[in-house]
Amino acid sequence: MFRASLFLSLLMFTIPGQSASQPPAEVLADCILCHGTDGRGNEPVAAPRLAGVEAWYLERQLEAFRMGWRGSHPEDDQGREMRPMAVMLDDDLLPSLAAWFAEQDTPDPSPTLTGRPARGAQLYSLCATCHGTKGEGNRSLGAPALAGQNDWYLARQLHLYRNQQRGHEREDIYGQQMLAMIGPLVDDQAVLDVVAYINTFTE
Image 1 (cartoon, rainbow, N blue to C red):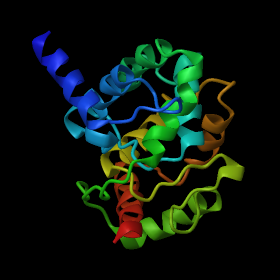
Image 2: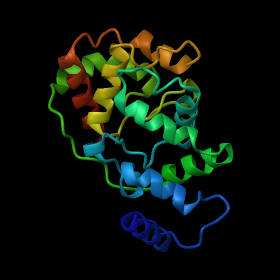
Image 3: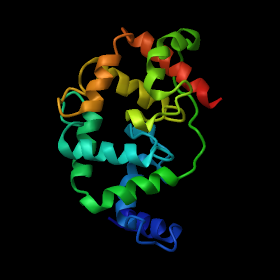
Image 4: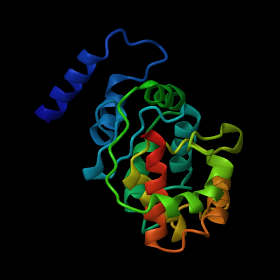
């Protein structure tokens, strides 16, 4: 209890001049506890980077967790941990929370996985249709940027799609879209290869 109070006090000290558009410090404290300082990601608890991720995408994912489109499959352990955190958020907090993380500027994460980028480039050609040739994303297609995201997180999400543990809800139209495109990633090595290629976007 003392550690949690101390953490909150430090967080409130490091976020001066809280404005109406900034989410409450206690809400940020809950998020940062898992997602790391400024939302830079935290691999030991499998919490991905939020810093710099598009606000529209973050808000959409929070809604997906709240609606049960994400985090409802029994095999998605991390998603099931995230869902109750999203459910507890008030509706009016979602835009400011997403915007705050989107505005954070942190160094790109270092690669943690090894694959074959040359083969990954071939596999990525289908991904580029929505996510862009350099993983820059495309809002009009609902596709987030991939460049600068934790590679271990990208690999895990691709595995979830491959196993139909994410995107399986009919209402999740973007998840359904991903399921339709995941075909070329036929095995674990293919996932590693395409993620290794995505890692080259930030070099």
